[in-house]
Length: 316
Figure 1 (cartoon, rainbow, N blue to C red):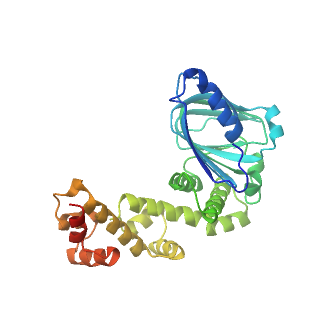
Figure 2: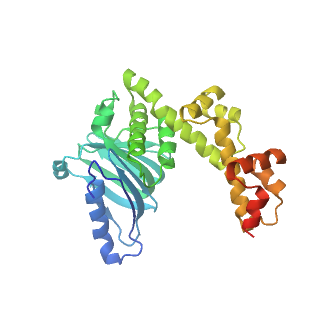
Figure 3: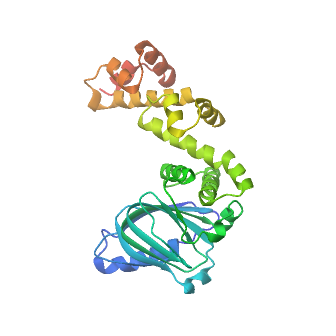
């Protein structure tokens, strides 16, 4: 599908339920319209992936193990597609040839595909996450984009780690155009840093993309475990506790408020779930990260306009 400047589209694709005889044509049609690559894959093996398409940004995630040959032959360049794609391998094997370069990324590495040049990609039982952005958006920030074809970015490059976490945290569909544009800008910043930003590009990215990615990574960690303290998170991300506080303040909240909201939401879900029907309210409060039951009861009522006992009573 061709994406215009106003399109916000999500797509979940699978050949699993298609007859084997139709799988190849369906896969080729998808890649021709949405990926702008030719693909040859074994029709006996189902292909499952999801895509998010927005102005200036396309994200894809291969959910099934893919064994295939993809290519962008010279004859395809006439389509005028002038983008650059970062492929972040999450499993299996991948090799790419473009120009005079050949790259075989290892687990966790990223590799670049430049759409203005012919290329061949070989996938063997591979899974990956990719983002594709306009070449011009990166060339204005990066000093090395001219040599980006088949460039391997090692997994220990900090900007790549931040970019991977940021991309993984993005929803399949972005409904708000402003948020879509903001997400695309953050990805431009992080990708330019991963490739090698100019001094000006680095200054810009440090004010936009890096801060946003770090904030999302910290939020994701707190969603998994709301009991993490700020000192632990600061050490994990090699930044200061004050810097974390500043990130939340710039987002219109505080670290403490965000953590409290996560703890209250965890407790609310547990109180409403039959799975925890035999748990006491004190036990649920402790599990959610509250050490003081009186403090928990007070903050819960402030947040939800009912006591924990009231909520539990409505679900019995």
